[in-house]
Length: 194
Image 1 (cartoon, rainbow, N blue to C red):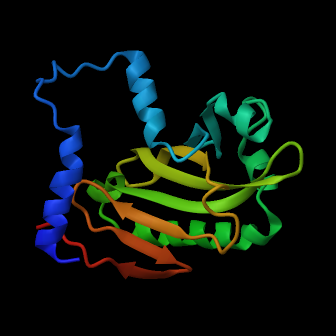
Image 2 (image 1 turned 45 degrees about the vertical axis):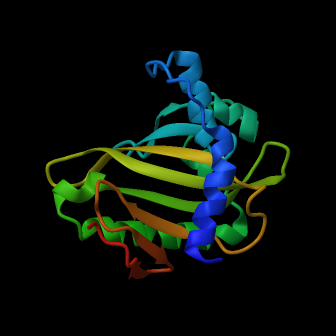
């Protein structure tokens, strides 16, 4: 479809939403904020804070109970490692090594300017597996760049991806170049900040 035809048709369709009334001041109360946030989540989620000093979790949200069927108090590093699908364990380890390779080459001031995403399957309490999107951002590091705390969010994406190999992505924030990784080979995307 040619651009002019597209533009004309877009204006015709989108014109339906045109309103002569002026919207009021934008205000988010807690209820609207939660509804707004849930709109952008891909599915049911829970989050936790990884303490890299203790190799355990400082906090686990209650959503883990609804999704995996376990109490937040029993969800720790050992528990998580035990419920990773056996076929995804080598991927999980390769992703961990790739993440270390990437972050160890960054200057300290850039450590908190990237987020990590990957998917693996996790076993629920009833024995069935869910495809979970793991997203993480660094919350705290020491002066030498050693990780102290990471915020992780697990989101059930089984309805989006039921089969296929897990994929790792490291994504730049705040104008930093997005980076995608598969296995241990790095590909810079051709999108640059203008």
